Length: 378
Image 1 (cartoon, rainbow, N blue to C red):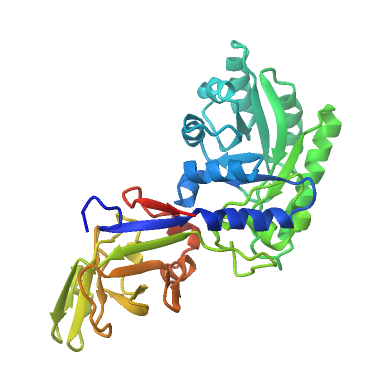
Image 2: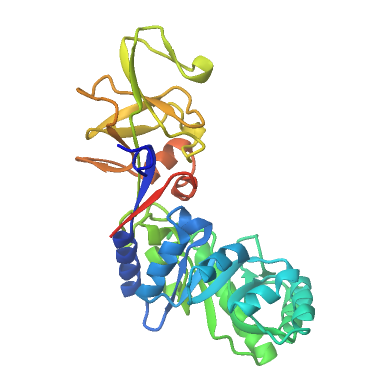
């Protein structure tokens, strides 16, 4: 195998067919007239923002959502023409840039909006805006229960240079359908949005609040638009799967680069945290924490070789780690090792690695680094 082959070292296979299927499954489950914003922030959760945005646009998604202006600019430069919504609060001095590129900007505080307005008044451009409200997330936005913020919102709507297209909030526990806090947030949000319309006479085109948890678990809170992120990539946001069948889109694979035999008492990797209790055969695989395999998984993860589970042993290094292949007959250099995905009857899910690492599957797929080539399949 040539070393310039993307499958020579470590690679991620991304199934565009699975992403499209996940989109279609969620779309079919939505209330009539509900719009779809495909969330492709963080390089589409590690799956490749341009490719996923293009697929989502072709599939009919009305919006593409990103975290910051740099992500939005990348999509525009790649030819994405759909409406793009920036979730984050951008520095006011760049207000003219998203306005020129027909990118929708989130505004979550009055002072930033004032500065943007001042800048835009000196140009011929208007910036389309969605107002962010905080209904219980405790992060960004105007507080839905605050009279002070109610007054700030009234002033906000009057600012020239800003075109107020939508208003939204973000749920904290929608992946837990048994928790009634999502309903409380929804009621706070809708009450605040309707009150703002009444206070100002301004009618919003879109009121939205639904992340992946809502699409899977509680679509009664879908409102005018849903914003699935992790679900688009086939990973459920929590243990509940609702009535939607999702298929994971990422498979992370590598190859055995070396094998060796060790006797009882030999140590493996940094810190000598693993000491062989009996003779073992080990394999070195070229994936480490610089590729996105968290060091905290050291000694906790299992991978697949020739359709069987093997243990990762010793500390995960920057560029490689070791696995115990004692029980894999014929295992040799060049064999494929599945870190995430299926091999024969066995499957390793991103959720499995997340549980071992004490984190969430979002972090596992987002962590796959840029040096790991993405190979797209239908």
